[in-house]
Image (cartoon, rainbow, N blue to C red; front, side, top):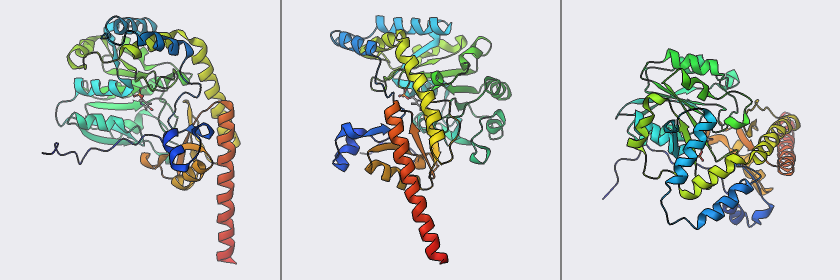
Length: 371
Ligand SMILES: *Cc1c(COP(=O)(O)O)cnc(C)c1O
């Protein structure tokens, strides 16, 4: 007995966890600074934590009222109908629902390279074929309509990440609109705004009034600090919003998740602190490292370090975990998540030392060779 041929399916490579690294290095998890997975350094909103505690007692019930209430609350926020809000098990769950709703076997999708791995994974699970468009480093990872359209060839779904992971750049809404207009009528443009709250820019949800070929993905994992409960949502055009009822896993988001989400949406203070600290940290990281960085609109900064795997490893021994971007196809870069002020300062000073040590070794070596 064997599963179907899964050789074309990649395994998702998550950032490394604190416990995992602490155990491996024999360190105390409390001494580690984890800036590898773009999680919220302040933890979940305390209001959401309280809601989770309270919801524990009703964990025996299927989530019905809470699911409906959350969809409605989000619909109010975005000024859409509640049917247009597709709740799911994380933003990743939304990507799956969109694949289920859009893809027939052998349909092609267009994903960014470098980019978030799950777009292609989800498409493959749904028997789709994956093509890539290049987000070119030579072009400073600029996210333009041309970068996408140059590689577009009638794919059924085109994925845009804005702000982009792992580079931090973003698409202007004009570019999104151009892409949606220039692609076929039956091509859906998915705008993944997992980091949307960190960007000082309008959401592509604004385009849904006029268009039926753009869908937006959002998550509670990042700014709301609820990555562990798994909660995300799509905002889709009214024209085909009813497809949700035909593709969703029953009770797509848990009672605990829905209650946490409802509470988190009311905690503006936590969200604002998170966004402000990320903005401070982005600037701090770029300013205080003598390494190339790219302007970020998210809660992380991409840093060119030479040999990312070696640098990430050395940093880890110093108790700082960052994301080696080799699996993104950028073996010379690490991605550093914005931490609290103290975490960010520590990460930057350790990284600066690692880079300085390596530079010194390199010049010593060069002198030896030429000397
Ligand atoms: C984190 C992230 C998501 C969503 O993650 P979930 O935890 O599944 O909500 C989606 N897209 C990108 C680009 C991300 O970085």
